Image (cartoon, rainbow, N blue to C red; front, side, top):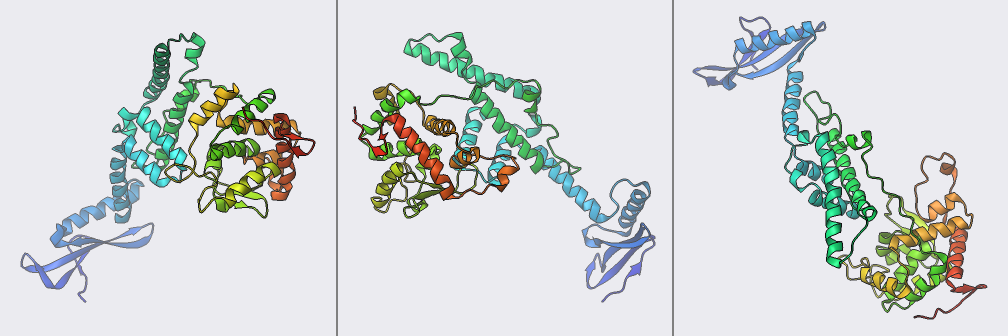
Length: 425
């Protein structure tokens, strides 16, 4: 192996290749040596054929020594390479567009299909002209103006629809339009930019986005006030509503609506319930991937158990309890049937109203708060005591049965422990 030779520059050495030549002479490989914090350091520079020579090596060594003395800049070639890599990455990050950030966001985050669809909708509806805009160019003023523009566009669209139907909405009705959707789109943007702040770095290794521009809406209290929807099917409306449901010819939709009413499940939890998730022996069903990502097994109350048992036993190989024409093979939201039920019963409702009705009935029975939250799979938050409460299927069976009994009693289906046949309209 070739030995190291000293050059005329202090701290610069080289060795010659035994066979290869450069410009008629043995090819040289250079290294530098210096002391850093009392310790000898040696770093390779490279071959003479790549443009390296003793003078360049000396300049690099002198720069390192100067940085060590002043405490500024890189103190080794490795640090220099890291800084240069960060600088290159920072330049790339500065050029990242909203569309590219959204792609990285989707690839990195583990999102539910429904959430992904909503985020795509926000990109398509609220920010189509920002897709190729650099993240660095999105300002606080732009966010505030877009938030206001989204609501105004919704108001204009609502007025156009009313005009087409010959209706004249009040000022109050107009003001209620668009606020919820404008807020929703901006919450998506806030989430995307928060992700970008952690995902992309500047040259110093700090977040590319120092301050999320969507914070302007909170700091100026510009979020639109959207009251939480409080609609439920009132007790006196329940018999008429249930009678209309029982009159639905499609057994799958009828049973699905009863499932939502008697379990308080979210609509997609019911739609995607698989036959394998139902345990007829234990009289229970399991939500494998609910909204809060915590699998949960819940009891089936008596009346509903009869319905679900029949569907499972007659599933004929179907994957889902409520099979349908959706692309995945399960039921999709039955909008037309809901409209028909509203017309026949005179009771306006949404699928989520059934969940609210279930929770309201549960609360009226003075059941344990922990039990109610488990039945509807709500987060129990930071309550310390709740962390010690262990609930299993049998612990929840009593509360679930009480809620079903109450709902059926009010609806006129259950009377003194027996089932009463509902007359369809």
